[in-house]
Length: 304
Length: 304
Image 1 (spheres, rainbow over the protein chains, first blue to last red):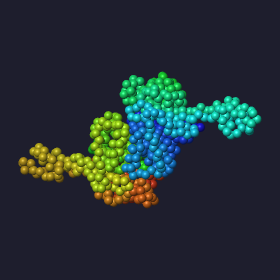
Image 2: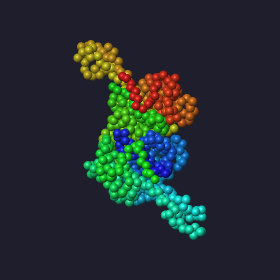
Image 3: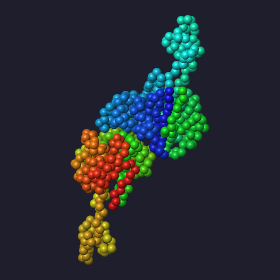
C-alpha cells in the first residue's frame, strides 16, 4: 500500500529561482490529499502528471497568499473539466468567505458540492477518520492562525499464518487472532496469537508542520513520525529574524526532528534570499542527518 | 519611442499544453501597463524578465478566473519586495471587494497605496489621459460585464526644420508652427508651417478586445488600430458554441479585423480542446492575412 508525499512547491512568500509556492500531495493507498495550494498549483499538478480529479480533500494551513492563492483557480478548473464528485476543504476561518465571494462575482455555480470545514486553531482536531487512516490538524505558532496536519495509519491487524490454523475456527475467532487475542477451538486446542500470526505491519505517519516558529509544543503531535516536513525559511545567522517573523531556521528544524525522534526530515519554505540551498541543507543535517530538501517534483515514500 | 505588446498568456479557461491564462504587458514609452492577470502572471513576468515594479497600472477586463486570479499574488509580491509607489487598478465592480477581503484575512496592510477605479461597462470611458497617451475602456459582449481597452497616442506635433528658421521667432511662435499654424516674424517674413516643419509622426493605436462574442458594436472603438488583439476561442465549425458561450471563432476575429481596417490582428484565448493552433491561425488568415497567434513570450512592436 502506497504512502508517499509529492512536493509541488516549497518557496516562501515570493516566487524565485523557479521555485514555486507551497503545495504537496500526500498519497495514501491511492487516495490523494492536497496540503496547501499556492498560486500555480494546478500547473504543477499538470507538470507532475497528477490528475486533479483524483483529489477529494484539500487542507489549507493558513491564509498567507503563498499557501492558498491557487485554490480558487484549481476549483474552477475542476468545474470546467466536469468534476462531479464532492470536494472537502479544511481551512482557516475566512477561507470559505473568500471562495464564496470569488464564485459570486464570476457568477459560477460549481457542478460539484464543496464541503468546507473550519479548522480549530487551538487544539488537535481529527479531520478524517477511516478504518485505515486518521488525518488531524494541530496548532503551530505563526503570525496568522495556522495549522499543521498529521497523517497516521490506524493500528494494523496481525497477519494469519494459514498453515498453522485448523479449519475449526470461526470467522469471529480468526478476527480475534488478528487482533492479538488467543482462542480455543471446539476440540480444546489453544491457538496463541503470537504462534499463529505475524506481527502487524507498522502504522506509518507523516506530519506537515506548516509555517511555524520553533516550538516544542508540537512534539506530541509529530512524535516518531516516519517523515515530517518542517519549514526552514532562514539560516541560523538570521535566527532573530526567524523569531520576529514567526518562521524557523534550518538548525531549528533539525533540532525539532531530533527531539521528535522522526525517521526523516523534509525542509522547505525557503526564503527567496537563498539562490542555492546547500547551506540550508547542511545546517539542518549538522543536527539531524537524515534531512532532505523539499524540492518540487521530488517524491518521498514511506515503505510498509 | 517604444510601443509594444508582450504576451504573457493566452489560453482560455484551463491551463493546457503549457499555455497559461490571459495577461499582456503594453509598453508605451517605457511605461508598462498590465492587461488582465491570470493565475501565475507573476511567474510569467519573471520568466520574460519584466520587472513588476515597473508596472503602475493594471486593467482587468472581467471576473472570470482566467483573467484576474493572479492579481492578488502579484500585489502581495510587490508588497513583500518593498514596493512603495502607488498602484492603479481598473476593474469590474466586485474586484475591489475581493482584493479587500484577501488582504483582510491575511492581515496585510500594503506598504503602497492602491487606487481602484470601477469600470463603466456600458460606454466608452477614458481611464488615463496624459499629454502623450489616452487609455480607454469600451464595452464588449460577454457572459459577465466585460471591457476591452484601447491605447492611443495623442496627435503628435509637427517637427521643426531648424535650418529653415531664423532666430527671430519666439518660443510661442515655434510652438504654433509645431501645431501647424503659420507665423510671421518682426521683419515681416512669413513662415508657413508646411514649409518649415515636417508632418507629425502618426499616432499609434492598440486595442485589446477581451473576451467577447462577435459584435460590430466595437468597431468605432478599435477602428484603424495598428494592432488589435481579438479572442479566437473556437474554430468556425463550433460557431454555435461560440455564440452560446459569448466567445468568438477565428474567422469572426478575422472578419472584425477586416471591417475595422486594422494593421495587424493578434488572436488568442485558445480553447484547451486545440493542442495545435495551426487551424486557428489559418482560419483567421483566410479572412485577414496579417494575423499572428498571441503566444506567450512573443513581443509585437508598432514602429513610429
